[in-house]
Amino acid sequence: MKRLTPNGPIAVFSDVHGNLPGLEAILADVQRRGVRDVLCLGDLVGYGPFPNEVAQLVREQGIPTVMGNYDQGIGFATGDCGCVYKTDEQRAEGAASLEWTTAAVTEQTRAFLRTLEDRFVLATAAGELLAVHGSPRRINEYLFEDRPESAMARMAAQDPYRAILFGHTHIPYVREVHGTAFVNVGSGGRPRDGDWRVCYALVDPERSSSTRLAVKLVRLRYDFARLAAALSTTSLTTQFTGPAGA
Image 1: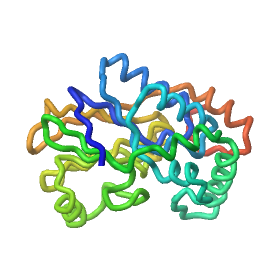
Image 2: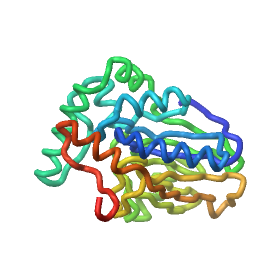
Image 3: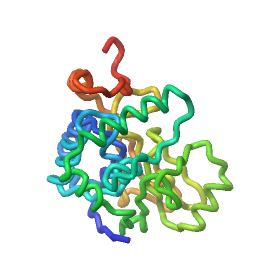
Image 4: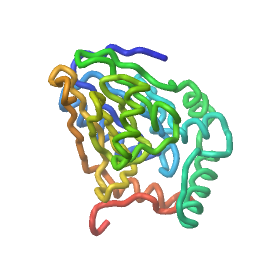
């Protein structure tokens, strides 16, 4: 398990899923704020038309990155993205995404995805923070906000960190349970909470207390027209929601 020692606020994003304009909007906002420490919780690829460009930008920026379930499936060519679909329409979209992404990624991208970390521990002024993709237990476990408190408390007891940072559901929230902050940073490419804007989290350990981790969920508009234009040149189905009228 790799340890990081950030100094100051930490920008944390996840689930870009090949949305290069979304990622660029996040990195531009982070730079504007002067935040030096940036962390990615995985799923760089899948669904979106820019898997290679997203992976290249993250690699060039030297952003520490956790492996997501889609990164794992594409990087190791397993033929499975580790996704869960509830409807036939979702399964069809998922199959189209997996087929297109598998063919589109370069060997350089695939090799980079294989190097991503399982998890990070961040040593901060607020205590140790655990960074994973889905949950501390499984790379593709969905931790929704309505999980019973007893279940969250058991997880906090098993992994007694000041916070657990994760993504995977594409729905952001912050929930304090028995001294552990569960922070879902949302999606930097494909939100699922009814807000089309991409999302990332700003975590500020130095402004945190024992009862409240200082977290700001940041929503950003991005160039959706550019994303839509790129999607139209692929066999990917439209799986991204844009602004009204787009």
